[in-house]
Length: 467
Image (tube, rainbow, N blue to C red; front, side, top):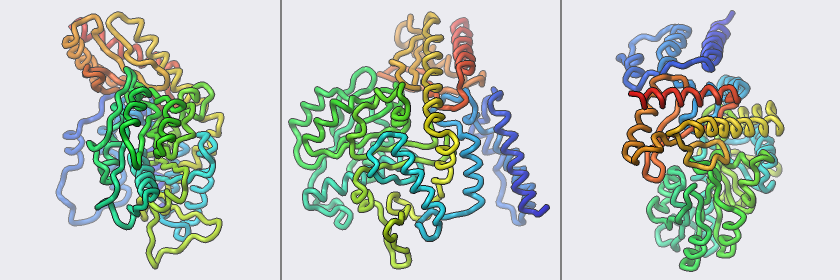
């Protein structure tokens, strides 16, 4: 056997061992300090054997890895990195393709073309839209908002791509008060400012108040970019697109939707009512490494106006080949030139699951979230603070106690849950109070796993309450 074959087989053996053990794992991961201690040494002067390096990497890293690929990881909205996507990603790394353009990596570009078409079909978005394969929703929001910035200023006679923002007409940015932090980061990166926005009041679930939007629109003029949300990060709530988007369009606004995980509601008949009217927006950001279960990193920047998308993103140089008729250059739709060929894992997951499989996966996660909520809400002292419309839960402990005591009990319960290690979930603040938030986003989280998770939460709560 060749050295390369032995090396790759050993890596596959170690990877398979980790994945097979993940569902049953209930040992808390090492923290940063303990993980650092596993690797902290001076730069070696001499090299090491290839197999020894891979084994050493595995031995040092695994104790500090959370079971994010297991069925009871609910800490953030993180998909399970499906084995088919991982296998495709193995090949992507082995092939070593730079998806910078269609000439240096023809297969990578071609696969993106097909996967983009499939995504638009699955998510019920305008088929003329362009899709950029980016690192995740953070860069997807950035990319879409860059297209929005350029197009809105172009319409009033300003070329932002050539002249920048010095002396440019002012753009009004409208955004919900409970928008995700990464959208504010994207606005910061684009020179639009994370504080220089008009924040719109939201309801108890984090949805923009249409009446407040109407009142605000009466006070603004000129270029407008509005950011709506499909799936509030804590509650999973959706803005009322059918009511809001027409109001914005009447003012000539560019409407962008941050749909990091919520956009996938479009793929299921059981959840698509939540996103009714979303197809009327101008751009959408979402992730593959959430509900499509691709490995990290993978996201999609989707823009209705392909020309606006390409104006904002195209990287040109004399040594870079031009795309001819019928060709797609991946670098025209993302802010990177050298980059990973993310389309391979996306294509593999779409091909493996198909429309029906993705629908089933989304429905299973949402049903498991509802089951956990139902089981927890039966327990005195535990409250579910959100309408469980999708896969997110906001959980409060000590609901029968004064607010400050409830905060303390909630924090202690979260600490106990994490120390027990049966599940992983983290805390957050919601409406000024401490809460536990759960995100059910893994293809392996069945009803049995949901019941096991609920019981572990109840056990931790009772233990802390007795103490």
